[in-house]
Image (cartoon, rainbow, N blue to C red; front, top):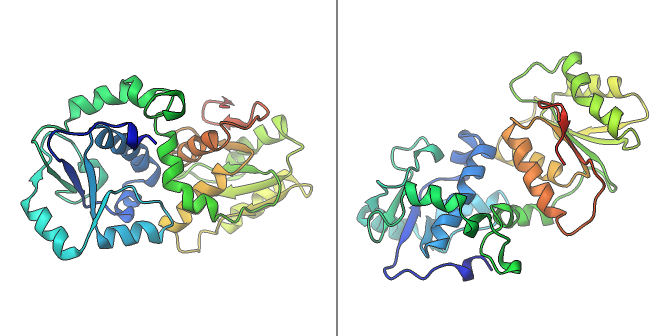
Length: 287
């Protein structure tokens, strides 16, 4: 719906996107997707196409993510278009990949530029009420739901009933003090919610969490530290948290923030009790 409400350009334009899902993961999946969705909206609003090669399209769909592109090219055709396209000198894209040139542009040079992009992300067009209320975009909420749609539909939730999603902070020691800090909000605000899905912990830390919470709680985890981690596991964690009735985590953690964003929009038309979210870093509820 949002795409149908976008502009029709006088001159055809496109971004040839050479960034894979693995590239986004290496740059930090939560952070990268949070930056990509506004860019995606900006490009689409200006009536420009997203063009990808067949291998990037296959990899994206392999991870059960919905296509964002309007054109998918064979590798031979992609290389021809890539060689003929010009660098996107007016639009900063290097943050999405370690590649020297992560994308190229077709069309009028400078049509897509950083200044206009910054204005777009502050405008009512992007932050407005969405197409159902006569607008265009509802920030990046609809785009996140579209991207994760296939994975959300095919998800196998850890529990058949409502559960708490808990993510411990990355790159920090998950000792008993940390565990108590992240489980105290659960015991204080939602002691009746005794099914807990924990992500980003080792099997040893999982044992400690079960000990701290007590035998009345059922605690499951996405994977142990010995499992092969990567795009698939991170996406499973996001979907597991996004499907939870209650969320506990750290707002500075990009994966937690991404999951919370999707969680909010999944339930935008469904009533829910408040509070349903706790930000341990700020020591206050977040929803």
